[in-house]
Each structure stands twice: as structure tokens, then as C-alpha cells.
Length: 123
Image (tube, rainbow, N blue to C red; front, side):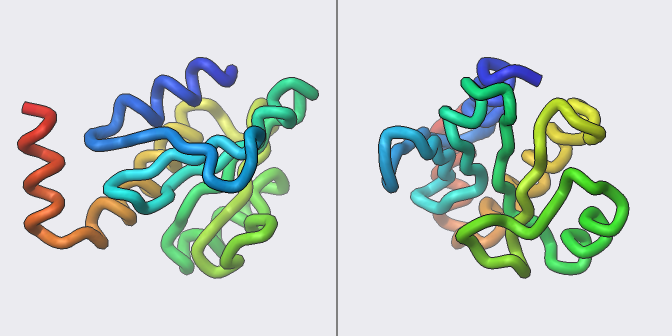
């Protein structure tokens, strides 16, 4: 997966916006102001891309046990966030599924009213 694919896939989700709230390196994707994906642009430039994604705590533990390149997220809640090394053992298709899972967790945490507003914007 390259940066453009990651970027376009995250932005293709309903109601998603991009931000740089921490510095000019940490690209953050949010839905309704809540973060679901974070990645360092300099890591992509170095050829060592990683992405932090929200994850169900039980599933997070399973993924970490199954893949050497999925670890507790750096500088984030280790219970709810994983860091996934891109272009390693984790297939691109599965990374997209993990992006979907992260987005869905955040989207479902929104109020029904906010969910409906986002869905209506996209129609």
C-alpha cells in the first residue's frame, strides 16, 4: 500500500476530514471530529510506513498475537489502538478491513442524530 492509496481510502469514508492537529507530520483522519486513523508522513517518506487505528480491545489482543507487525499504538491508549506496519506481513486488503473497523467503531460511538447527519450529507 502506498500513501496515496491509504489517503484516498480513508477520505472515501462518509463524513471524513483530514487534519494535522499535533504537527505538520502527523496526518489524522476524523469522522465528526473523532480520530480513527493517524499516520506519520515522514515514516512513509523513509519507507517505513505505519498507521495507528482504533480497534476493539479483544480483537486488538488477537491481532497482536497473530501478527508481528501489529503492536500496541505508540503514544495512544494501548487498549483501544494498534500500530500496523504497512507493506510488511499484513496484506493491504486486511489493512483496509482494519481501517473500516476503526472507522466503524468511531462512527457507531456517535449519536444517532450525528450519524444520520453524516449519512444525509453523502446522499
